[in-house]
Length: 383
View 1 (cartoon, rainbow, N blue to C red):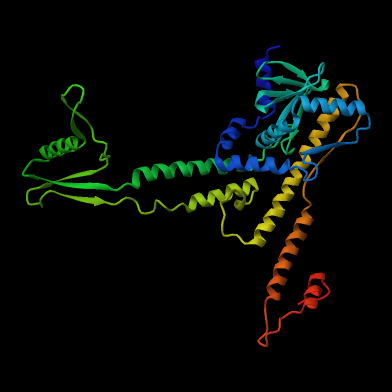
View 2 (view 1 turned 120 degrees about the vertical axis):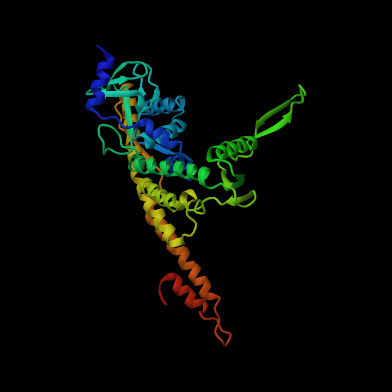
């Protein structure tokens, strides 16, 4: 079988995601921070057990011991960070289960393609059968099934425009921001050609400086480090003023980055991350931030569900390969969103009551008595 023909066929049949583009996007600071944030939020540790996940539903002690040994041998908890980060970046990530001596090995989706029940590894040109439980994929979404859907997918075009804007801004600042000098040189009654040659000679002399070489003691010239290449030289014919130099100011709008800010807002929107999370938004009130927290938490909980189900299927296949007929369940910690809302409500309520308790009437009596404060807190009374 010609493996190259197979891969060409797969590329036509299953449009591959631009994984190399996702790699470039991950080099951008904000996007890399977003991927790290997604990974940390999905893999939160239970404050009681300090573990990322817990395995339940396995009654066979041998099966439980076998699974624990495999996870410890492969350092699965730390490996899971690599898996989740790359799954968020690429939309999928492959984990290979070796059948004879079960252990785990990870593969980037750049390295494999599949057709029906056969997986083709691009690195070794090796054929691997899905039916033999050797390759298992982690996914964050199934929008592009059978391939995974990257979290970065909605931000691809926005990222390209943002990089183009940033590169344009750098070029504009380098060429337009520096101030330049305008040299007015009297040339008397020279002809236009003579004046041009004279001006060129003066400009070249200004672009060179004479130095004595300390090693040889001879006189040599080297380019002037002061950048005057963009300076302007203008000849003044007979009747003009004496030689003078004026300063030509650079562009005054180089500090205007409203278009960059707009594209950054679009980028954060596509990544579904509050701008304040990455330190790019400062003037945000508490109520707004709480709503952003809750909305982001719901998205994280959804992605965590994909990862949790993927871990369950991986453990199930590991046990089946080794002859254990068990159906494991994986439990992952995530704060209750309703609890987050109630905690914020109680904090705001406590802050309001504390402020009211400090207010006194003109007579010197407090605005609220201790009993009224208790009633307010218990909800038996309202304002």
